[in-house]
Structures are given as structure tokens and as C-alpha cells.
Image 1 (tube, rainbow, N blue to C red):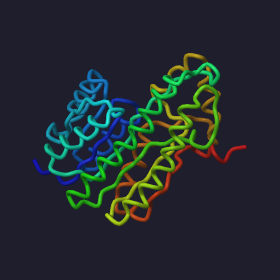
Image 2 (image 1 turned 135 degrees about the vertical axis):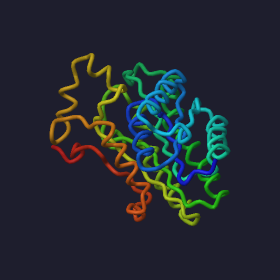
Image 3 (image 1 turned 90 degrees about the vertical axis):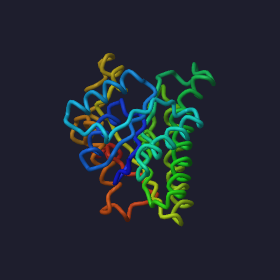
Amino acid sequence: MEADKVAIITGAAGGIGRASVFAFLQAGYSVAMVDRDTERLMTLLQEVTAAGMPSDQVICLPADIADQSQVESLIARTIEHFGRLDVMFNNAGMCTNIPFLAMTAEQYDEVVRVNQYGTFYGIQAAAHAMIGLGISGVIINSSSIFQEVASPGVIHYHASKAAIQMMTKSAALELAPHGIRVVGIAPGIVDTPMLQRDKELGLWETLQQKHMRGKALQPEEIASVAVFLCSPQANGINGSIIPIEDGLLGKY
């Protein structure tokens, strides 16, 4: 089938990913939903169908973005199915909490391979595809406010998100001649399963108070910004990382 607008969303079964799937579908996109957790991906497909979304507007692509060949394959399969690619949302990410002095190289590498390398693979493969199709698309990368502020136990996460910040700027510069925009988002404290451990440890209220209005953001609030960044109204935004953090970075 030939779709009008097509988006790939990685980490689709997670909090921000799931919200983004619905947001892009509601904005008229066909969506390739990517996640390495096949069971959660199938559950998401059931939720999309139950919400009344046309089944021909979505496909499920189980894949591990830390594997370059799988990233290249999922993009090829998306284009084979829908006929085009307009948006690549490199949203998938992971984090573990391990004190710096106890962290092994393998534990560091596990997070960096998903967050940093997975984003690199997604940017590059999507760019090749868009150029080949002659499409001036948009590539969105998920960074974090932790690209700028420190927190204990997550040095690998900080490193990977800071890398995404600069990869976004650098890729935007090199892809601009092809009409491709590359942008990033840097969410603050978002109510997603990734922060379940903080809730279990009784840290949730403390975390929320880091925002100016003392409340965590919802995944839908992040997803709506992602959709906006792909719209013609955001055409002037390129190489920028948009903070979505309710003033966290400006709070003393």
C-alpha cells in the first residue's frame, strides 16, 4: 500500500512510545511500531485496534535497535509495506541504576549500545532511505534533561543522552542539503514504567518536585511535541533539542 505519511517509532511499547503511536495515528500518519518486547508490542496492537484505528495503518516490527542490521531491516520493511518514510522517531532507550565505582564496562556498554548506538543506526539508516526516496523527512531523537544535569548511578545514561544531543546537531548539519531536518526532545520527569523503581523506593514525590509545578509530565505531553516537530509549522526548527521539562533546568 502507498500511505500519505509514514512514521517509524522505536520503543513503541514503552510509555512515551505508546503515547506517540496514538498521537501520530491521530495526526494522520501510518505507523511502524518497533520494540524488542514482542509480547508488549502485540498488546499495543490490540489497544490500537480497540481504539478504532484502521488496522492497515499500523505494522508491528519486533527488533533490537542495538543491532545495526535489524535497524536497517526494519526501515526496509516499513518502506516495503507502506511505500515511503517521512518520520523516524528514535525513541527507544534504557537505563539501569548502578553506582559509578561498581559499574562494569559491560554494564556501561549495555546502555550506551541501545541509547547512543541505536540512535546513530536509526539516524543513518533513515537518512539513506529518505534520500533514496527523495523525501525531505524529519528525524527525531529522544535525549533527556540528563544530557545536562547529573544524577547518581546513571553515568552511562548521562553519557548516551549527551551524545544524542551532539549527534542531533551534527546530523542536522550534514543532512540539511538533502532537505532532511534532525531534531531532538529532552523530556524531564515523565510518568513512565522506566521510573517505576523510583516509585518503589519512595522517591516519586521528590522527583516530581524538581519540576517548577511539582508534577511529573504525562507521556502524551511529550508525544504531542514530537508530532508538532514533524509538522510544517515546525519547519524552522532544525538541529535543536527541545526541552520538555516544566522548567526543571531553570529551577534553583
